[in-house]
Structures are given as C-alpha cells and as structure tokens.
Amino acid sequence: MDLKLLGDHLAKYSGRIKGDPEKLKKDLDERKERIAYYQSWNAAKILKMDEEDIYEYLSKLWAMLIWGNKHYKVDKILLENGLAVFRDELAQLVWGNESIVDKWDQFRTTIKGMGPAMISEILCHTHPSDCMLWNRRAYVGLDYLGVKNLPRYDYQMTGKKYNELSSVAKDIAIEMERFGIQKPNLLTVDYFIWDELQVEDKLSQIYKKKKTKDVPKLPDDKLTSDFIHDEVRDKIADIGQWLGFKTYIEKKVAEGSRVDAVWETTIGNMGRIIYVFEVQTKGSIDGLIVNLLKSMNNPAVQGVVAVSDKEQLEKIKRHAENVGDLSKKLRYWDYEEVLQNHEALELVNESINRLGLVPDVF
Image 1: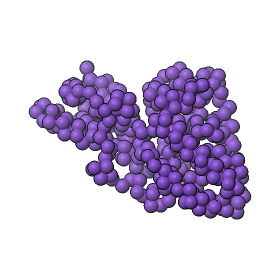
Image 2: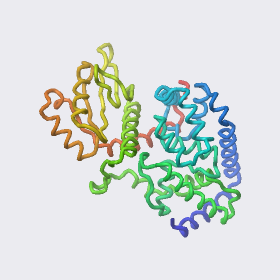
Image 3: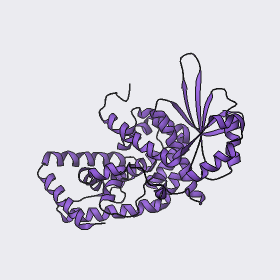
C-alpha cells in the first residue's frame, strides 16, 4: 500500500470533515445507529427471527440498494435456503467462536444468494473494530492505494482473503488516527474510502474489457470451481430479474432436466417463454448436452444457453454441433461476460434506486 498517497488523501479528508461539522455529526450519528442496530441482534435473537425480522435486518444494508423490490430479494434468499438454515448460519457467522476465515467460508459455501458485499456489511456493522466492508467501492479505493492481489470477483473473496483485507483496513484506521480522526474503526474507513478514494479514472477502468491473455481459465480445484459455478448461476438469475423476467435457480423444466438458471416471461394470453442456462465449470460435457436436450422437451423452452470459459465453450460447440435441434437453439455465454454484465447492471440499478422513484412497498 502506498502510505504517502494514503497520507495525502487523509490530510485532505481530515481537513474537509473538520471544516464541515454538520456532515461529520451526520456521518457519526449514522455509523452509531447502524452499529447499535446490528449489535442488538445477538445470537439468541437471530435464532428467533421470523421472515419480517429477516427482511428488516437485510433491507437496511447498503448492498440492498441494487434491488428496487427488496422483498423479492429477501424472499428469494429464504426460499433457496430455508428459514431455519438461514437463521442458524447467520448466527454462526456473526457470533460463532470459530475464526473469521472458517465462518466466512462456511457461510459462503452453505447460503445461496448472498455475496461478499452483503456478508461483509453485516460483519462490519456488528464488529466494526475487526471486520471491513467489502464492495466495488472498496475495490476501487484499495486498488488506487496500490494494494496488491485484490479479489476482482466474488468467487475470489475467500475467508482468508477477507481476513487479509480487514488487516489492511485496520492499517488505514491506524493512519487515520495519526491524522487526528478520533477513534476510527473499519466502518470509519469505509466512509473515508467512499468519500475520498473513488478516483474517476479507477471507476472508469473497472469496467474495461480485459485482454484475452488476462482472462483467467476456470480453476481445477473443486471448492473454487463450486464457488464460481454458484456465483455465475446466481448472477445470471439477477441479470434476468433486472431485465424483467421471472427467474429461478436449480429449476426442473422437464422430466429428467434440472437446470442451473431459468428466465421466464408470459406474453399476453399466448403462454410462457422460457430460457434455460447451464453453467459448466467442471464435470461431463456430455451430461450438460443431455440435460439441455431434455429441457427442450418442454415446449415453452425457446432458447438454451451454455455458460463457461472460452476453452470449454469450444468443446461444448464441438459436442453439440451434430445433436439435431439442440445445435439450432444452443447459445454460448462466456462466464467472464456474465460477471462483467452483472457488475454494470448492478451499478445502473444502484444509481436509479438511490433516486427513490418507486417506494419499496409499491
């Protein structure tokens, strides 16, 4: 990390907040309120949460700003995980005695539909001295400061990496105190990153398409492969939702065919149109072909999409080219493009939803 660059920005930030006591008080009050709220949910209280409690708990997160209809997102999390499982895993994540590395990996492995932004925000609000808030803005700020090996995508944020980055945030908090900012914690660091380190060229660079040689191949180890599979699957569903489709994951669409993600819409009184997606990170290509072929037994299925890296997609094309109707309907989507498209749409939705044009209860 470039400590001189950090110091330059801390000097400006410190001077600015001292010169605007009203904003400083507003920010301090907001931080205290959020910390007090999330710390009020002890383990016993979390284990007694009902669906409305969980909605209130999650809907307050800044990470939920990308969802105009927050009830949709929360309902989907509960549907995919179950109320009891979600409560147990949340209590363990927030108040369990294991290391943050183990708790993070356990929660990420078990709970569907929640990424690092939501998880880290809960941890940061509850344990602001130890846990940082990680999101796109944190990536931009730390990248600007020269922090190396930052996780570009959700699947790269392991418990070990999150713990390392929380240590970096603690170093920033120490430097903040040296510049006269009183009793900074890691939520204070997040406010600093948000207000001071969102450098324009870095924000524009984040969406530039990577050169082919820089695009990583899918990894061989099963744990990482599973993380990527689930992240891509979930983000395909998110993209469909933002485009106006009803979306499902792990959905049975025909006898013998359960697919990773589905986009569904209804056209007037003409019936349903379904698009199915299969994400291939490991496993048999022949199995993928057979599953997609069976899905076409549902007459509502109008398109099938294989999602993988470039190398795997070429293999899938070769396997599918002589498989009758499948070759005519099969489309191919690079998983890196899925992640990039999701990120761009996420930014658009967050920006629009900040305007508050449509109330959440509408």
